[in-house]
Amino acid sequence: MGLVFTDIELTNARDDSLAPVVVRALVDSGAVHMCIPHHVARQLDLPVQDRRGVTFADGREDTVDYVGPMRVRFGNRQCLVGALVFGDQALLGAIPMEDMDLVIEPLRQSVTVNPSNPNLPMSAAMGSRPSR
Image (cartoon, rainbow, N blue to C red):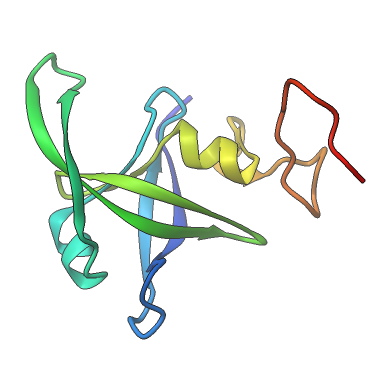
């Protein structure tokens, strides 16, 4: 399977007056977090919430800013996440993909909403039964 990219819309979840930013994101289910470049974090005026240690694919380690909250939209799905800030490419990792119930279609090299749940994202939840 080759690299998979998709367009996603990003917004500052605390400031609706700022225009959304549409980015072409690398989709990586092996990565955990949402990652954005510095210029996107600045455009969305996302405050630094923390610093996080990261290990890159080539084995290097560094400390990067963790910003948010940010709203991520794909199709009829959205989620709120924090993002690691580095590099020049947005990356859609497993946390936002799971939160929006998205799947990778390897043959089409694309991302789509889970066909088993086309109208509403579903999550696996363990524990007590929900009240109705």
